[in-house]
Amino acid sequence: MSVNLWVNTEHALAYLRERDSLPHRIDGLEVMCAELLPERVERVLDLGTGDGITLGLVLAARPDATGIGLDFGDEMLRQARERFDGDPRVELLQHDLSEPLPDLGTFDAVVSSFAIHHLDPPRQRALYGEVFGALRNRGCFVNVEHVASPSPELHRQFLEALGRTPEQDDPSNQLVSVAEHLTWLHAAGFENVECFWKWRELAVVGGVKRV
Image 1 (cartoon, rainbow, N blue to C red):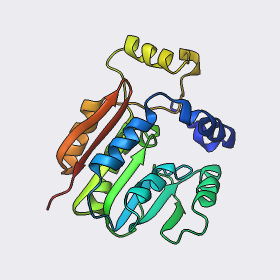
Image 2 (image 1 turned 90 degrees about the horizontal axis):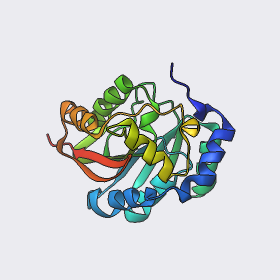
Image 3 (image 1 turned 30 degrees about the vertical axis):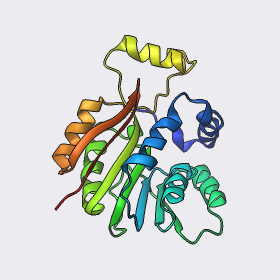
């Protein structure tokens, strides 16, 4: 049975304290913002927005856009509201991604960073289909994600690179391989599906909707 520690404020705060020290994490976000966003973005949706760092980077790259950030955590949303205080471009909503996405209209880009892997794999796949439905024609989906290693040994090496032991592994993680992510994206109807960047268990996957 999976355990979701992200309902705990202490777990959320501990992650925020160590986040910026995680190796290569920012590299994946730079690929998303510098290479994969459409040139014109009017509306963006951030799934599992946390404290809003990813949505903030997207809006910095596309300052004429407006954005909606979804998260289910009280502490994360509190910090996101502090980050975007007074910014009329941003709307923050409480929503658990284990439930179907609410009807929020359509978007030019849907993004997520290190959030979807906390859902069980069938829900992850279903969410990809919902994202496809929420995108406008030629809109893109970019998921900066924690993925599964091909072997237990490579997973152990990844933890060592983070300075962690197997006992410190996050039980909330429900990781799947890059290949499975790409299969789900193809099945949802995305084109130009690719793993655009990868370092060990950190990856950027996504695709484009064309109708």
